[in-house]
Length: 176
Image (cartoon, rainbow, N blue to C red; front, side, top):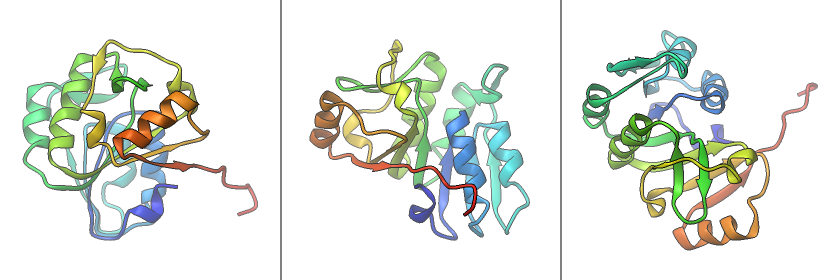
């Protein structure tokens, strides 16, 4: 569902997370991307592939996420002009938008979204009912949500109010 929105030559940010790792795998079909990430897994998938240029943000390594966070990562991310930032989240609230368990992750998303033309959130439907204490970017900054199920009525209404486009991701058949 994300791949058609990413064209060769774009500058893309991908954060840490299992969902963004699946996006990174799909992006191996694109060429000459400038990819910026704080995720070791994303970096391993996209570095030295199809002419991609990869920038791994510095900062403090968070062992659980296998990603870098903190002021160094934020400062480096702010130096780029992203065509699209692809973010995950720990929760998606109809009141607050993206929520995170880790304050440093929430802060990094603020730096990234300030430097992005489009902000795409990729998440599973399980995040629609979760909660977390740290707010991410203003939800009106988000441009697109991709998930495996439709959001409930309350979240769907908030997405509409915020101007966020929703795309339902469908499973790729084994025969494809």
